[in-house]
Image 1: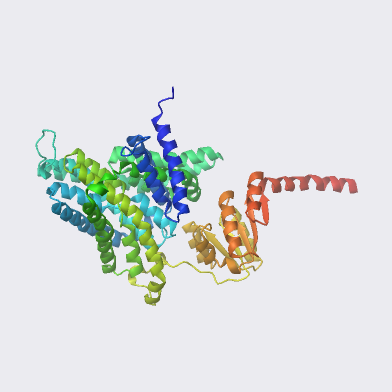
Image 2: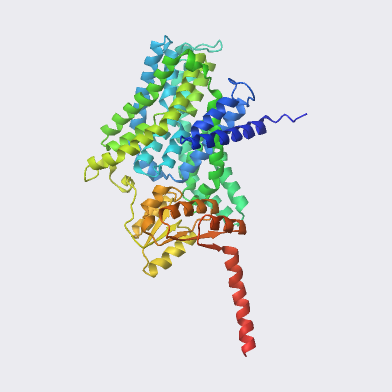
Length: 566
């Protein structure tokens, strides 16, 4: 008799089906997210066959959100957050108000009570953390000025939703929901709840900024000094999960917000880049489970029973919110390209929407139909969202031609660099990764007068190298457009200094298609990695252990030869 293991079954079946349908979607040249969502529908309670544990799936998805926001915080300093506060705070608040009013208007047309309309509108007003960050990362926009605005906007939305989750139970009786026989909360009680919540959030932020910025980097630096890779990875995960859980339990903020601040204070450590790399595999795996869990909640019958309501909900999310965000960003003096990116970033809903809808159902403020419309709107908007970014990418050349010669005051400063740096060098060396290996290579090549271009995904390194006059392309070299920006077609050498052999092989294969005459060199850690790199058109593979052994042997053999000669 098989063991009762719902957690293992949920993870195993969810990942296997997500992989199969993700590969199918990729083969059909559509976003793998579609495959992940379809996998969730298949294992959900509304289809026949295996049914995964919905509660466990939601918790696994929450872990994905925590790790993802932690990774964003690692690349997002307090300075970055404050630099966009003038647009992110008023912009997010105004957009939430507009979207909520649109949702309430639709609810009124459907004959719902005002309380139902309020919960429905709030659920449609907040964008998905996972979807937004994945789209920004995929398009190399996360560290751009517009990407920082979008993330800052998202943080403000999260804070507002935290307040909404606290206040809705207190207001349930007033709004026409269930109060479990208790009298509706008095106005003074509601104000007290609001002030208490704001105080907790402010206290958490103060502790993280004033104390966390010292304690967390110190702890990570101390663990790194032990030389144990396992302990270092464990410390990164412990910080992310521990701060996220503690912030939710002690201060009432969301897991995502707590993880974001944990990453942001850890950004003060010189090991932040390694921490981001170590958390990446888990982040990707749990982000997939997030989309599977969304698909599990979806009841496809709503598309047949309420097609017009589903369409109207989607229009509020994709069109209504987008227009509101676009107008707001333009009113603040930002260019059209930035406004379009922000509008597309927010034209979807996700995890907070599900939480709000679920709370609304529990409080008797929102019916089952309302929750199904929120889920339908979430899935459809997630499917449509990549198309919006694709459309903006197609419009970008036209927008660049129409852009003013001088940047607007709103985009002034170092964060205003939005267009990718295009290298003009020829016959040069391209270095991928400016860590310990890449840094040594660049210093030696520059000393020899060799022209070079560096590709790196660490913003601090990029800014430092550009300040020294080095041509740097920000991004991941595995993407063809990043290699093209480094003018790989006219390069002579490609030196891959990153430690990931699988990624190095992909980079080499892509570079070879762009420049068949390129001399490609890479590093490896073991024999299988050497074979993998050589199979991916790498000309020279240097394995650290071999070179260390050769160096040691050369020092042994030299005295022997000297003694024999004497």
